[in-house]
Amino acid sequence: MITQFIRKLFGRRPDAATPVADADGHHINVHGHAVPREPVIYSASAEKIPRGDVPQSAIRTCETLQKGGFKAFIVGGGVRDLLLGLKPKDFDVATDATPAQVTALFRRSRVIGRRFQIVHVMYGRETIEVSTFRALQTDAETDEHGRVLRDNLWGSQAEDATRRDFTINALYYDPVADALLDYHDGVKDLHRRVLRMIGDPATRYREDPVRMLRTARFAAKTGFAIEPGTKAPIRELAPLIHNVPAARLFDEMLKLLQSGHSLESLQQLRNEGLHHGLLPMLDVIMEQPDGERFIRVALTRTDERVLEGKSVSPGFLFATLLWQEVRVRWNERLKAGEQAIPALHDTIDAVMEEQGAKLAIQKRIIADMREIWTLQPRFERRHGSTPQRLLEHLRFRAAYDFLLLRCDAGEASAELGAWWTRYAEGDPTEREALIAEAANGGTARSPGSPARKRRRRRPADKAAGGEGGSEGNPTDARTGQGGEPPA
Image (cartoon, rainbow, N blue to C red):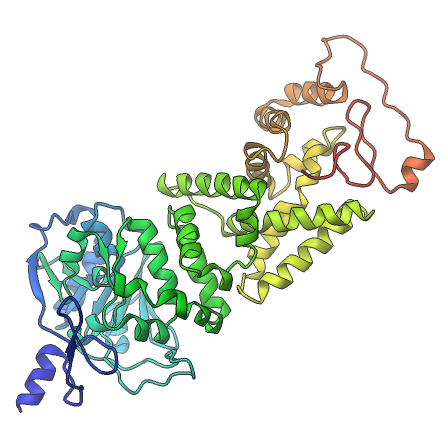
């Protein structure tokens, strides 16, 4: 009876090994997991959680579950960001209700997931992710490296808290009761600005190597110091990243790039030796002055958009990260005498094949990346109907933004970017004048003056396979650009 009472109250299993205390006095059992403990309960208002910033969909989800006789709390990053004064992107709910019990309470809901089932509750365009409290397992199925493969056992709230990665992510907010439950001193770590893993860090990283990437991402996002014990095993265990399914790596990398702190996050990955399993080319790129400048400009612009609440295309993000490798290899092919467009397509194929072994980039995103890259040479062709056709292209805006990044990084001329900005924003008359200006070598023709005659293409030009440009802006037959290979 006493054992059952303890397990019900604290989630503690009777077969748990005798715990030992870590450097901070937190108890860890011989399996490397934190021992479930009684929570410290704070007033959410006293901790200055702005309830007005919590969407009604999340509050209604908690209210409905509680009226149904279940526990329900907002958990994870949403609570952390509220306490830090940030605007959360997502709000997740944890409950003691099983997925079947959750779907019985919400008409617009569905169960997803294989490793651990969760429920998506829909409110219009909003989705609240509802998960059932997870049990603290000592006999979960793992691979030879210790990564957990199946994990669909439900448990108590205290057990669920021990299963979360960082103390600052193991906070449970009840918006109905205005209560904040803290099982692992997460509030104290928030005030101390410390990022600390729950349990033995090495064990937790082996269970799920993605936690190492999350450590780097959260450290960059919050500016928190990584607790020494949490940081110590990362460099040694970094090779375990290669054992993570490519699809999970892609999802984590996308979160990192869309965090609003992508540049700091990538730098943190490099500092911890984690980038080799994600973007093997990154180290080489960042060591090249031109490549580093382009990456920094691109990610700075991306972070600015995210922090302004604007959307960022995944295809655009990965196109910026891998462009330098495409550009360098493309130039090598051009110097070897290959034709520009076929060489570009072959280069893209090679780069994506290599990267696909590490990141399972979705086909639709690869298609976006390919179009952004292949449209770049067309910006050099400012004659005839080419500019208008490019302006009407479905991916013009993304390719144009990419061109401006190249201009800002000094890779393409500022004049080219300015010309396309004026063309995109101009009316038909202004666009015609801009084309005439480009045809006259950058000098606009005065109204009523005769147009310069276009130079006739010689047979040799046609044999070279080029499209030929107007006089004053000839298009190099070998490169497909304005007389020069890509910078």
